[in-house]
Length: 580
Image 1 (cartoon, rainbow, N blue to C red):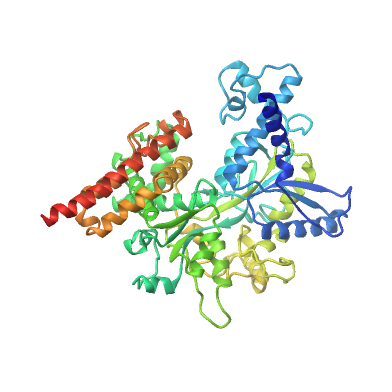
Image 2 (cartoon, rainbow, N blue to C red):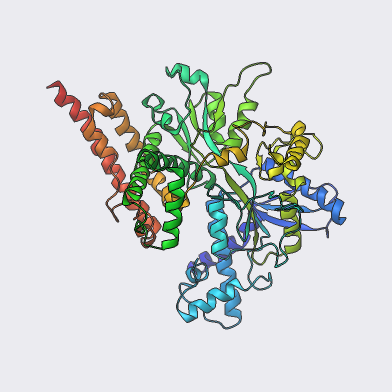
């Protein structure tokens, strides 16, 4: 019986890619024509438009249509776990057929971000990273398309992805034009848009969507314009939120909330943007332990940063306490807000803008509005990456070149039916190429004017122009980027797995006079875990990596549930004491 169960599980692992495949039909494709295998978190609209667009482009340039075999298994978290498992299994089989040793912790050694010190482990690690042959080690996937920079950068460091071009580099006109004008920057104000093996293809910002009629029902006269507004007690039970452990993009939105608080606290301590850049450069150059700063950096600067991080975590918790729900689907929140099922919520910009348009009746006012908080969000990229051991490598590189070129970029924001635009779905995304946006450079400006009549969104307006938005937000990766993984788990344990207790505690505080009248209850509510390690800005980077993730989540959840029960009891007891 045990052997049968093992065999069934093994068969399931082999079958998973076929169970989750999503083939997009191309009418003139025939058996024997090129086929590309792409794993993605993108929805059906994106998949259809890029499958048809790439096939048409490929037929025009290379004489054959292409069918894309989409593999859809969930969000980027699920994709990363699946790819890691596939590469570890493939490598194990490859090394064993060559009578090479495979240690008990082979998967961990293989995917380590840094080269191991032990000679045997180092040999295994290097052998994996020098292989790019689908006959040796492969995930049977060609491309990883979509999701955030965090997961694509992690895939690069783990060796799951490889550079698309060799020493000759990418073709001319892709990242720079013939005159050296940058068309796709490497970074924007601290946000990395492309690395060695991942290439940003489209841009995103994060913000708030709200329903004006629902706000009026709640007595809220000023629409939310900053992240702090969502902590207003009047939003209790009225916010739509998404699980950040299921979506890298939503996790980035929560990071923006924390980062914005760091910025405000550091600024309030008297440090200017110029000083911040100088200090961060000095800290990076010094290479000191996490939390330590070199002599030329004031200790007060680091202390302000750490206070800001704590303030950001507290703000996330207050927002979570107002949640009506946490959903697995980031696209659901704007839909619910437009329908009035939630008064407001956190949204990715393109979902917010698209739903705002779809919910606006002809000649009427929008049922829902989306706004990016001023100084509240950086602009991040959704990349594409070439998988190690891609079975159809040449075809995959062509897809990347199509995606980053003008033809692919049009699909992101052209209106349906316009020349070079999508055929059925308006995707409403922000292209990454600089020549789609206003510029002081006459050549780039002329290109943006050429695109302008066909755009679905007014990319020329300051509140939509991704390059202007990106330049208005200084992102410091050391502040919150190194905490990305722990912040996802912290939100889950603090606001979701203990969500019932959190909402009851917050409701009790509000019902018994509010935070000002219940300082002890608020203190209990806002406590951070002291186990399995005392949680601080520094320990979130160091100690977190030393404890198994599931153990940390379990201990944290138990801690938060206990604290919230104590906070609820304190609020109720405080009210009774006041009566006496």
